[in-house]
Length: 286
Image (cartoon, rainbow, N blue to C red; front, side, top):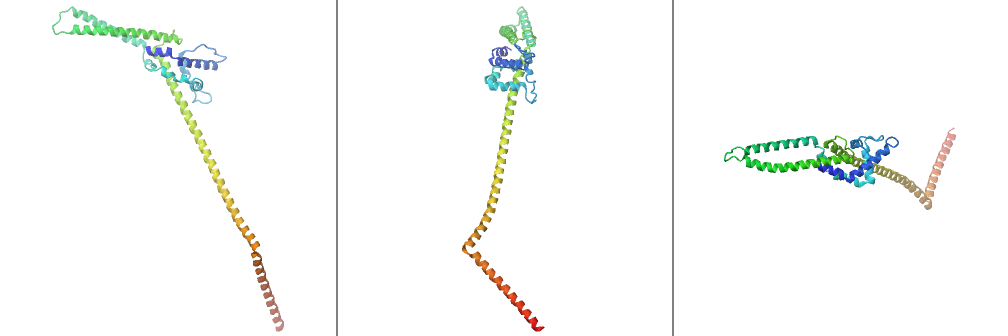
């Protein structure tokens, strides 16, 4: 309790973080309950319960952390200044005072018994009085230190309540420190959520870039195949045209055509002669 109270009062990062929270709250409540000079620590954990109307996975706490990351990155080291909150959140001051009262009564009962035994006749081997005398001496000194620490812790805790405007409340240390401990846990979890969201976004962007690159590569390969196909067709057509031009230049095409013409004329002459002969024979026979 003593250490946690000191940490809360002395933490500059916590104070700066609460200033940002107050500024955000006044901005959100502008025109209604804005212009507040402070807020109850009990409402601190409501930040994590305030969800975005656009994305329900994003809370006001996530937004607060994003603001801190952008404008006040040093405040993000706040948890390092509040290391004793988890243990202090487990202590109930009323129960602690009750336990100390039981120790006081028990120690007083031993002192009464010791005084009684001192007045009684003892056997030679009875060492109760010397042993318990040493025990009472040491235990009384330790118990006195314990009471001083308890009074100091109670005083520091009272100052911590006053520091955060809770001096009139009846909150116990487990409730008071538990509010800040719960907030710190939510704070760390929200930072992890944001980091996971960034990694997922980066992974999605990287996957989208890879898909775009693969698509562009497939388009290039398809275009190259089409270009090669067109180039092959043009090459075949160009080869036939080159052969024709070569034949025209050498005269081979004309030689071939002339031979074809001569052969066709010979065939035509032979056919005409055969027809004439047939007709002549027919006339003779008639």
